[in-house]
Image 1 (cartoon, helix red, strand yellow):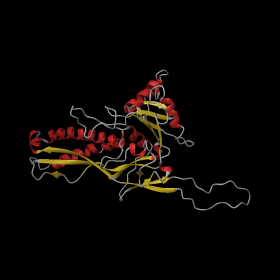
Image 2 (spheres, rainbow, N blue to C red; image 1 turned 30 degrees about the horizontal axis):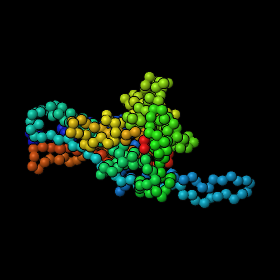
Image 3 (cartoon, helix red, strand yellow; image 1 turned 45 degrees about the horizontal axis):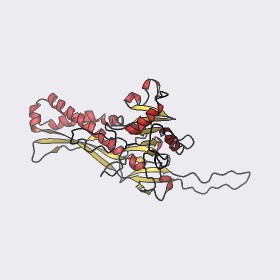
Length: 344
């Protein structure tokens, strides 16, 4: 290597930039924005799995009584826990010996590294968004909304709990054709949203965020155009100031949170034969009605978008590789207050 301190330059540059990466990532995705604002981004420090406590039942000792009537003091089983696996992801930043020579001087090397680190950051954030909307079937991926808030909520095992056995662990699903009788359009989408919403309210508990793909968002948007309804004053507010396209439904923000192609079926990695870069968002013709009080983003405290040590030097190449790493998962602590509107 031309510069014996290249490793130090790379590491310092990475640490300076990745110090902000975790925060930038949370602002790249509408769901993570809301989880961060509600204090639902909580690190964990270790363990075999990520344990998420569940409040799944009422205390069974409540009763009306009169005078000296005996009260029920029997213990109530109201809590359990779900266990989620720890998932890992990484993205590599590399520099060859030739590039090091061509970009001689510390400032030139930093300029080269910063452009590559910036690209790695964007790739990382897009990959995370793809996982957040995925179904968890990509090997090693985080639990995505297609898994946690499923269109077939009566089957599958989430966090070690069988949804087919425990009804409290099933989310609410509403199919436009199955339940509503016709595919989504701007004429019927509000009726479908109303039908799902009323099943997701428990006292003051209700969805606070609705994320939609391009099509479902467009149907809802078109249904409102006659009254020119917007999310907040002058298009500002929590999501508007961050660049998200936002509307309002009841007490929930409705956010367009798809990729530029709009769907979670966009390819991974982000290159196609046509040379376009995909991002991947919500599944086509889908809206997630989310009560983010019960959704959690759980990164590991020592692996939250940080450069991994030690440096990787190729044994048979004049090159150096540095990895940016993350570990954790997205967890759920209440299913029956989450809903999905889909088109079949």
